[in-house]
Length: 56
Image (cartoon, rainbow, N blue to C red; front, side, top):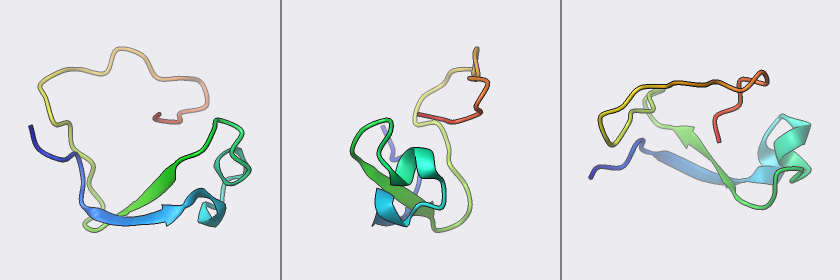
């Protein structure tokens, strides 16, 4: 299995979205993609997208 992206990990406090920077959904990190791409590490398909369009 491959990593879904390469990039720089930053604290959630640096994310310009209050849902994440205020840790409403919990603790974690954000990743700034190095090449602007996020890929699936496995075959599959997206079957549901939340109304907020957040990918968790």
